[in-house]
Image (cartoon, rainbow, N blue to C red; front, top):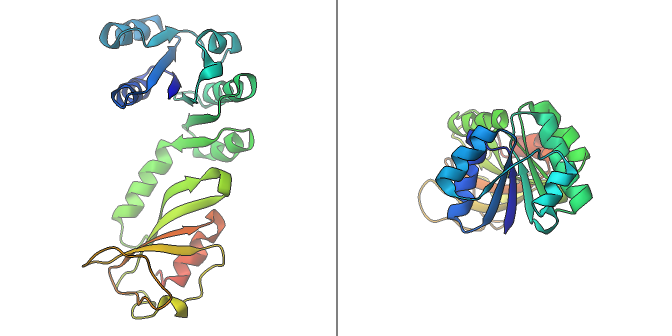
Length: 220
């Protein structure tokens, strides 16, 4: 893939190295000459000095053939503009934007950004995975389908312990796709699968149905 990264700061630099190690063709756009020189001295000609918000700059670096543009500057507005120009002026199939303010996520998606990444949300999700009282943790968002993949835990206080899946009243938008027991091998559940304390359930649902799914699985 040809991937353009807008922003050569710490996040952009680490992302660049990781993508290069995976064998992708990557170019970083960075306005700061000092940062550009540092990247070029270490990694070669993979940094272009320019403004990723400008259509002319994006055209100059061949954005029209890019498979993806990832905007990771420290400015939400710049990231939004870069993604919009890439998508609407250069027809880039996928755009990803870093957002510092999680409240901007809905706006970015409404304006056509395919994926938003918020460090605040990532930290909250990490906390949810470590706190036993959080029984449903979002793992992945499938933007174009309006679905999320979640990790649901059955704790010892859950009212569903000992019940078969066919006895549960799940939200119609939700489907349990994998059971990872506390002991034993992971398996695809059937209607007769009985839930046990310690089970970890991978499920597909909608963002609006997460709480209903938590309740259906006996979350407390």
